[in-house]
Length: 280
Image (cartoon, rainbow, N blue to C red):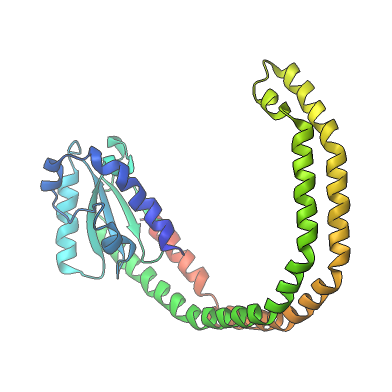
């Protein structure tokens, strides 16, 4: 699960949203505030789950919920409680208070609740803790298999490199011919693509499309014939490449089978726990 995706989800909206937040709101924060400068360290690379309270100055109950979350955080350090302005995430006032739950390394929130009242915060934190234990077990069990697969891929690339170089050399003249065909096709079409873009109505556009198809057809046929010729010319190289790859593919399949056996029903347990969290 990509941390880069999480950066886009949280960090990206911060770039736009934070300019809408007044310093006064930031100063009234009861919980630590997610900002453009701390989002990576506090959320994306957090060492524990993060409960994000989405709030605004217009939310009458947000302060009370924030106080309850703060009190819970002072007693339980397994979860990090923070708040983020609604202007950043584009949440309407009628949805507030809103809570998002983020897990380390997971790009999307595993829980989202509008009009959150914190009445079930103990159960919520307990279920988050259960999911986090399962997630860590999942990551730990996956790591050795990920390492093994990475090793197989590295060895396969090394073994295939000479054949890949041979294939590239064999395909070079065909690529050049393909480029020449494309250039001749563009010349033959002239400004028809531009005419199509500027067509006055559907009838004119259809007429231009037909002309483009007619003029393109011989070049498409020429390209198809060239592709077949290239495939025939390189068939032996590709067959040798497939033979080289086969033992690596079989080794990878064995690793994946062992991974599936090792993980057992762990993934279904995680899905079940996340579903139960969503019911809170």
